Image (cartoon, rainbow, N blue to C red):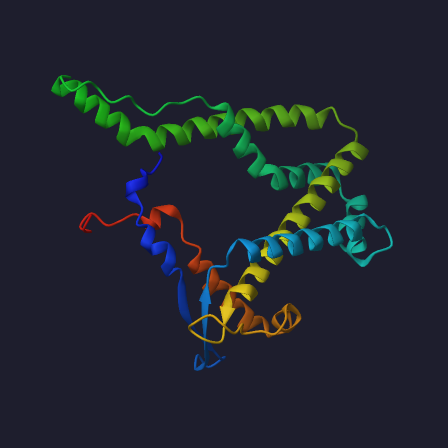
Length: 242
């Protein structure tokens, strides 16, 4: 359901920053940095960089002479059809869910009129309480329908066509993963500072950031994820002063 505009404390939008402790393998703090959510300009830079990286890996995966193609695509030639089908399903499960949600027609229970009887109000409240479970069951039912439909489609496809579809979906999946990880990595780089006034970035360049130890990078990127608050987390507490 939509959140009313008065439900959000806009002042908290300006508090999306934090001090971050960097620890070594012995869990000892070795450095402190400051982190904040990046603005539109840096978001666009991160997006452009991630798209470029995705495009680069896509070209490599399509190049039969590349290491990436040899590692991910070539083995498919020796894979049996039933395993190919299982792979396609695994790579498209999120698509099944999206299609199911778009197909299912279900409305939130309509609130009864103010003069409704007690029994009508009770039925309404019960339907509200049961709505998430009801909606979930409808989604699951629709996903099963989609799965049966796809099984029929797979049965009518040649082994070559199955492999082509799997390769296409695999490449898209890998590229999406690379794009997302690169975007988050750049966002963390742009959002990490040496000082609490956010004037000096902690790293001189993205290359400097990308070459730090995996443990350090993991700590920074996990810290940045914690800054990415969702709208519900911005809702004012019931006891807040209006």
